[in-house]
Image 1 (tube, rainbow, N blue to C red):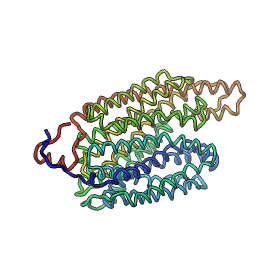
Image 2 (cartoon, rainbow, N blue to C red):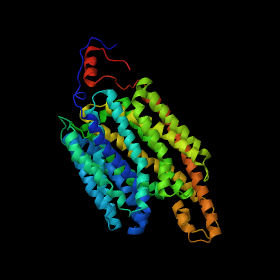
Image 3 (cartoon, rainbow, N blue to C red):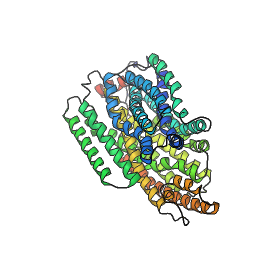
Image 4 (cartoon, rainbow, N blue to C red):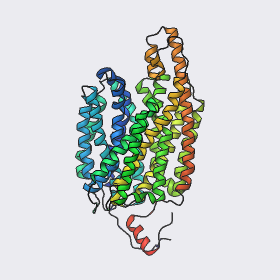
Length: 523
């Protein structure tokens, strides 16, 4: 029991009245990265028409941003721990704004690929730095849980607002406008962040090991590329060789970290059951959700004929649910338990995905909206609590590297999910039987079927679209059921892996004092 006679303890957070304004600056960064990750999908048809990329170039335009981010997250998180998280955040934000102009005015497929890759470099500096700064600004665990909830809510809101804003801009301006919206936000972030954000770093970080950086970069990019290539084109020797090369590089990275006195990433973090359980839960959750997230926009636009702006609005219930859940997640985890919050949230998502087994091309919006709301609530609850667990499981000095591990799990989960569940959708779709004379391109994707139908007689076009849409929905249903099984299995795993894990209820100074005197508070 906590002693009631202990003198009041004043934490660093309590003496910093600007901490909530500083959080507002961090939320801007998160919001922008989330928006940028979703608007490109809507702009891709316009970019394709204007720049005329080949099929391979179009894939690289869509994928290279996530490749680079996945490869650099750990390295940039560790760099922020060394040179200062405020410094890397503001420097990355400035670079992100400048490169957004490059993206907006790209003049060829090659320049667009380069612009997206460089934007990925800048983006990799932002997410780990924001979480690490939250860990160092908010010392009171309850305040930190709320701050992490707001951070997660901003990420969810950005992912949902992106299609809405992007659709609105694309209906009135050219495709480059979806990148130029970054400029005013980044300007505010940098100017205000200079004044409000405190600097923090690891006081004894050791050198930034370049071989470790290269091994991490090569390993993660090769693995993610191999997974996505296999999803797009099926299993092939080039994809297999690339994947094995990436796995070998990651093995070398782990061996090197274990041998270095001051590693880029302390692998001993994974011996903490709460940390490794939270990271695994994040990876598998994103994997299970990828089928719905990746194919939902196509369902709304290409199956139900909604324009981009309406499709974006239709996805808003997920953001509303995630925002609401994120704000109360810390309180729920303390009232019940960490494992109850995470496992309960994942089970809710799994059951919501299972409800899509009745989906048809003509399913009304109430069912879809309800599913999205439950998915948002469950995912918001789980992701917020696991982020809090990850931050609470490591020393403040390693907050950047730990945050980067969390974000890397998200990127790998998305890549694996799109590959595995995407192959389910694609495999079912390609087997549909269209009317005689159906072009081969119609069997490659639903977008290809829509384009092919435009050149056919009306009756033949209608039969082609009906067959293609029915096959796409059949694939989406099967992928949703598979995702549901993954989420339910992850809920069971989280229940056991997070057993005994608690979010502390005292400020860090008090928690340390309790640890010394043996009078820790009981959650």
